[in-house]
Image 1 (cartoon, rainbow, N blue to C red):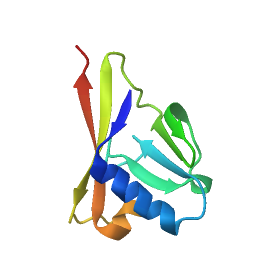
Image 2: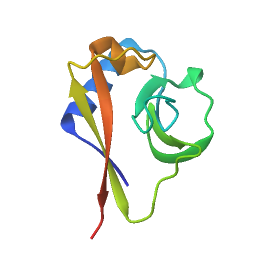
Image 3: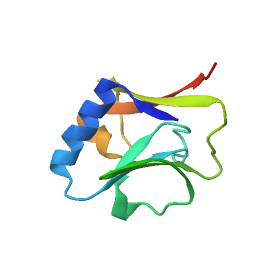
Length: 105
């Protein structure tokens, strides 16, 4: 259901090197950013949503009221050199994650 581009993984790995705890990527909690995936230290985000991905050190959730839809694959990509004034970790690197939904055939 969730896939990452190589650029997105590269950014996650880079952030993991500087954050000594598990990370959580939240989709749908940014009031002005809508469905932009945002990465945080796991201890800083209360989770109220649907877990859609987990591996050691990284969890991805769709935050209520956003829910994953059947029949779609969600791809998390990365945009670089963007103005990002949010509190998420990728903003430190002038980057923003992007969510793309691709309907399965």
